[in-house]
Length: 80
Image 1 (cartoon, helix red, strand yellow):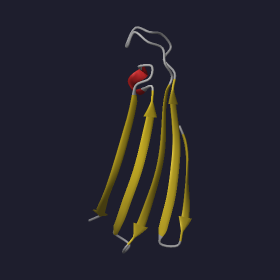
Image 2 (cartoon, helix red, strand yellow):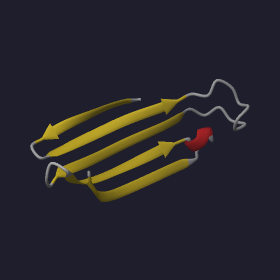
Image 3 (tube, rainbow, N blue to C red):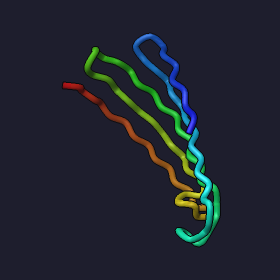
């Protein structure tokens, strides 16, 4: 996994790439390398409350060749 976050005032932009290569085919019956690409954004309303949003795309999901997965999320987080 490799990732980076770039602070931009009260907001941040982040991205990451994850890769997993199976060492054998005993778990899934396939040997496809699994890659996940993600981009996200946060905005701080206050020190304890922020908005977040991200999107991820997975290729060869669960090591199955040509299986794809997409996830999108958005929410507000408050830390107590």
